[in-house]
Image 1 (cartoon, rainbow, N blue to C red):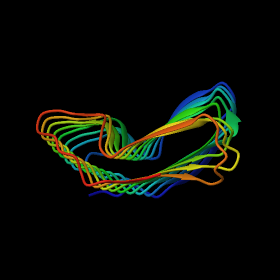
Image 2: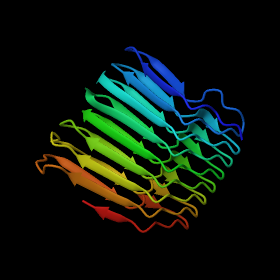
Image 3: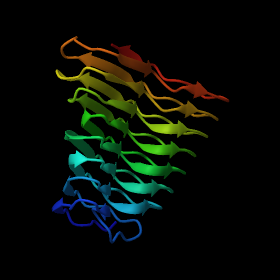
Image 4: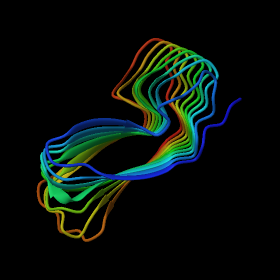
Length: 262
């Protein structure tokens, strides 16, 4: 298996720009992605999609162990970060990635962070054991996902750590241990989700799902731990919902053995 080089990239994007960036844009079939470190700084009214490896991981391709960080300032920014690819299929494997979105110095900006892929993970894909961290400022709705948007076939989610930190007065986040939906014979990983409310927080909230929005077919949820931590206990108009597995379950789906702590 060909291994791609380990790259270190730092970029600053101008205001009002639209960019899709890949850690390994030239990715041969069945290759192993490099262990890349990519840092992007953005200002206002910018859209960026940062991908750790390539657009699609196919066959027996393997994502690298990447560290991807987007620092967000100004306002009205939209950020999507994928630890490995935009979609994964075959027997592809995700790397053990660290994905970070930081909008603590921004207002009205949002990010969506995926440990593996923003699109479908299908066939026999294995998600990496990823760390997904989101720190957000004011007036923002953010989403943090351990694996991908949809898991189907015989996909196995990784054992992920998903961490949200609210630093501004207002804001909210949705945390998913695995994906928005798991179907067929998909298996959720054993994930650890934590939402921490910072000292300045006054209003907002969030939802934590150990697995995702729905389990169907013969899908199985992982054994997850969900925790909400309030650092100062001086909140107003705050609301949290912790769900060990999913909103709804159909067919022969089965949940995991979960621990919820508030």
